[in-house]
Image (cartoon, rainbow, N blue to C red; front, side):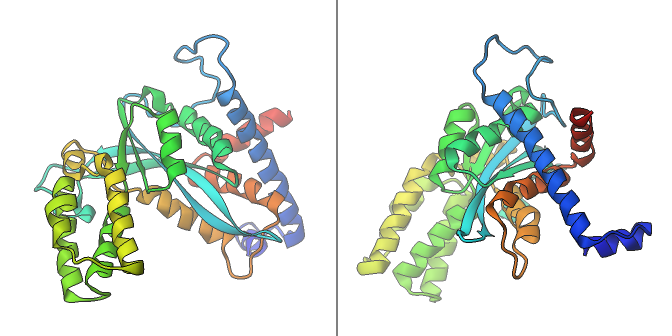
Length: 316
């Protein structure tokens, strides 16, 4: 497809094998630049960094603005290893929409995210912590006016958040909270039943208003007791909501102008990673995954030209 497009758009003919070879070389060069950046970002400080003297080159700095950071993972098919998890970070700017009536749903929430950047890697959580830290440094999130971290319930996401962004507002992704409430409703009242739908709507209203204690108290007492797997689903749902109760003050978050969804990183998992790396029949050699991720991240962050300049400079 790329070789055909090159010929159609420029008149230059190149075999797909040659194009693939160049693609491989560029990906490896971009990954090398990113890894060098990550090593510098995570190295122990010999002296305190002053503004303007940071070790990581800035790009689209969020200085003085409200920043939103989200972490998530998706899987890609790797030869001889099966489906392996790729982890990613998105850094965005939180902007408030024009003043209007109060939002009545997650889709109508006033805050929205712009100016996204991404960095992804096939790595364990400890290694990825340094990877995402370099992306945060690149965007200068330490100078943001204030910031939030919006994640799903994965423990590794919250562990990194606590280590790297201890002052950030922690928000559990709205859709994950409601998914757990819906699972409880279906287990308690029966899959697809009217009673399940009615209880779920009341529970969702509690969450939207930030009334977590009402949900875990009064609302929970409306549930019939169940055994075996259905009972386990209900108990696990309550444990999940209890664990994240401080991250579900959605009414407060919305009134303060924060986003309550991690759609940016979830969209990146589908459209930045999945669109390229999960095509029918595709299987990736392990060594090829991270170079391709490096290119995808830089392309979709709007940094391709800047990165290409850095590669040429290092080559020179």
